[in-house]
Length: 494
Ligand SMILES: Cc1cc2nc3c(=O)[nH]c(=O)nc-3n(C[C@H](O)[C@H](O)[C@H](O)COP(=O)(O)OP(=O)(O)OC[C@H]3O[C@@H](n4cnc5c(N)ncnc54)[C@H](O)[C@@H]3O)c2cc1C
Image 1: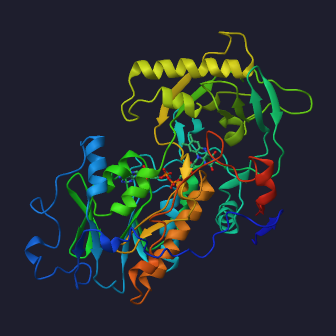
Image 2: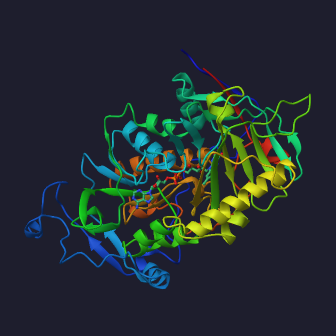
């Protein structure tokens, strides 16, 4: 079946230009201390010098893990660490280690394969790949919740190609339900149906799983939490709590937040680490709740009850969506599965370690958010039906609030790059475009044929700017009149 793209408006600020190659500046790498990491070996063969070490870092030559160290010591390490400098030629059959299997890391792997480059994707996901494209299914009741990304719009032709493939496979559909803005008190204003809103028909997670389903040069290791990066004998060595996970000619950091800062604090990549440290992230609480009966949604004869709403004027809620209508498309027989997100301000005020949420905090947040739902819907206090299932979750590193506005970052001397939504914005589309840009750049670098490495440096000194958007990210074309005029949106047909 053929697919067609119908650009509705002209010119997109999200269209990627050829990467602007940064020349070394006064803060050039060459003036910094560096570790020379050279080897003439092919990957997999050990050098004479290191043959006794089995060409892997051992407990003797491996530095102490940076885990468990204080924020101050991480900062000190980040800024004082020496630059690693790989000088060995790139082998004919290089392999890239990608840390993070969200949208950006997966698209990066897919596009490396298109260039004939092998990769291994490491991801912490216990339930599956996808990172913030999470869908949770609770059995045996078969409750279903998209618990991070909710829907997306399409404004770039290359992202449109990916989404069209998903549409052809029946994985993506247009969300035709009513979506709009809900004022505290129950006043609802629908958003226009253009630009089209897309959803994963069985939730977001299957989209992530499908990305690598037809690849042959991508290896996935999951669940795996890469805790150390070490340049050694001309290669990057990755490990998880002391367990060796493989060696790579180049690495991609496709995740952000505290974990990335720790990983980079003593990696030998000070410029990459410094850019990552500039990133600011919001925190958002998610409340997943199932109700036996439909919620009393305000509606009028002109619009059917909404399925998704950006909430305004309520401290604890910024978004609510009915997964049962959006995904299961069930009429009114329950249970009714809702995803509620807090505002970023509420997330910040109630922030706790996301891996270890105190029970009292979970209870307080649940009560605060359910009260916020009541307020948003304009219901009398205490009248919201009691949910039959609830779960609270904190997205501690939810969405970027600033961005260098460059598709990817690459340090050619350290043979390391970064991709992720935050390089361009805060959406699935930004994440996909970033992964694609980094894969193409690494492909060009590998084929560089001895060009000076500095010519491949990208984004290492780029300034960051604040990001506009909703508390749950950006929806190109949906957010402001100005954006609508500037952005080319795509109506996809399968
Ligand atoms: C609450 C919420 C709502 C959102 N709603 C929308 C929406 O409606 N529409 C939209 O377009 N966008 C939305 N977004 C944003 C969207 O989800 C992200 O922009 C996108 O998923 C980011 O993809 P990524 O690859 O950059 O990062 P991620 O998806 O975060 O992927 C990073 C991956 O790396 C893994 N990882 C981290 N550390 C390690 C390690 N040391 N070793 C191995 N793996 C590691 C993580 O587990 C994760 O799987 C939302 C985000 C949140 C939090």
